[in-house]
Image (tube, rainbow over all chains, first blue to last red; front, side, top):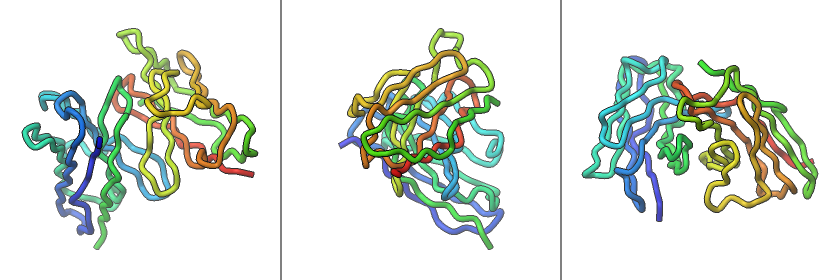
Length: 117
Length: 112
């Protein structure tokens, strides 16, 4: 079964850090660009970051650039998002997704991040 | 950044009737490689988004043929030929022609 499973979300204080993980299975992980997308509950979707198949290229939204780092471990079929200097406005459901022909063809169920004191 | 504007934002539809959602981009979505990276996503209540249409008009695997996409340049449309109960949710257009990728605000489809 093709699957993406996110983990690592939770409650963190402003200024704190979290590391999200996304475990891939059922498909050839190394064939895909990967992405993180977030969604404030009840609101729309916001692109966060992309990473190329071999990790050599990374792109970030301005809102997270310099604070978040996307990475992947192809040996473990895993994608990561290191989030530092977290702010209240980073509170959202975080989804990992695969990219095929520049469209998000596989999505995980998401992991919730809440930044609050 | 490319701004994606969807209309309507809410669409009550009668079961079995057609529905249409428009998406307009603030600039052309034609990429330098000749492709137009416009896709449509569906998000059912309590679920992650799901890909319906990519490259303007290509249905993704498993998507019913009542869904169709069309358009060119800056104006795009998602059509549902006959709405079914399972189509309730929020629909988003998305552009991946230029970073940052951007999404429309979403159109909520519900049943009258």
